[in-house]
Length: 230
Length: 230
DNA sequence: GATACACATTTTATTGAATGAAACAAGGCT
DNA sequence: AGCCTTGTTTCATTCAATAAAATGTGTATC
Image (cartoon, rainbow over all chains, first blue to last red; front, top):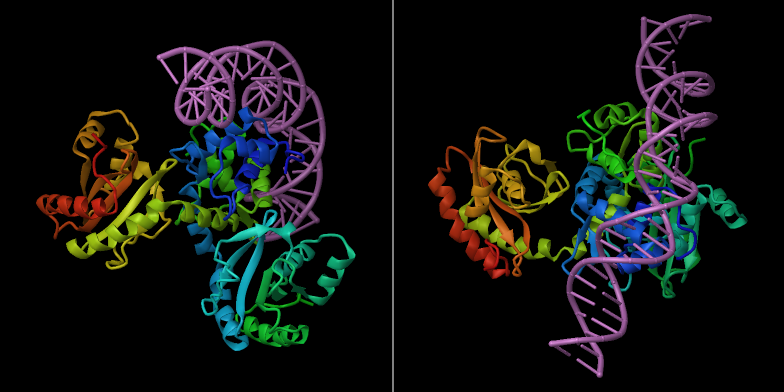
């Protein structure tokens, strides 16, 4: 990463938190410093504050990992987000009807986070989990769609915005294909991306496109739109 | 709260986040400012940064609530915290044996957060939830114990430290009684408080004390200690 | 057991980013 | 329309954040 560390204490601290991922669950000061481009001393002080509030925990070996305060805020988030509760029904019905993995992603910072997924198709080859998130830069159907509907400039994003969906084949994993569909609140506010994913061999583009009316119908029952209000 | 707002951008931002609770799931700028003692302008700028990283979401009415990034970190926390996974077994066995609500709390900042609880005794009169947290200042068995084992000065805390447990009767809710027992990692590191709670009318102090050997036995099976290593 | 190494923390002079009062803007309500 | 309530931006001032170097602490190596 070592590019430009942001200025602003808060931005820098949140940058440190963003360095964690499911693959990097523990980080030590040296790594924070290297990955963020911040001075050791600076990172050390920020980390100390984050620990004191419980957003980080210090492991016995000196490394850091996310702390219990995150659980607290996640719990409140879950309770506030009626989006989550409302989308869960449509997701399970869609996955039932199309017999593929269905999930819902939102943008959080520079990542896409899974807010909900179906419980039916737990394919170990395509493992997503609620709360799991990966960098938008890694691509994939959900990432492309989230970028497009957050106003990213570029022809490809203009097309995605115009269509309201994005199909990816082997973008993040060569064996899989996905369609991501934009989801809007009934007042037209953009919410996130609903995706259906399966083996590329089983899912030609026309199959993926045939899912569109199913998605529209099911999310519509919960009061969501697949295009901004007219 | 309006006492002394901390100095330091990061402390101030985290203070803002700490203002949320299960009772206060949405806050507007005015409230942030009033509760934290920070200037409107200052709070507004901090909130903007937090929103940009997804730790807060802006609601359509202008108010703020916790954002999806918290879900992300909570998910990593859960995956790193072998404490959670290890304590779940003992908790369900203890609640089974003593036929009361059993839960495990840690300190996160100035709050106590529930990391795990049994699923057997869901008494609506005593409702705790994973991730739920309340201020340590509100008291209760878990809070008293967490304060004691985080080095708070005072005779009462010295006693609690010496005993390794704390019994509360009607402290937070007049109808309930609890015993909180200190939990240590096998290397002697303090982890948090395991509590058993029930109706005060059913649980005399000797009943609560009779739970101690049960707790010690069950958590011992998972490699935890109820007193610091000798 | 002593030396070297790697990583973390503290110190300190310097700078620039955070600050808050006030002005400005945007809704809501009577 | 005009008032009131809430949020945002501006701008001169100052204090808190900064990074290089020194110090501290623990862990390999010989």
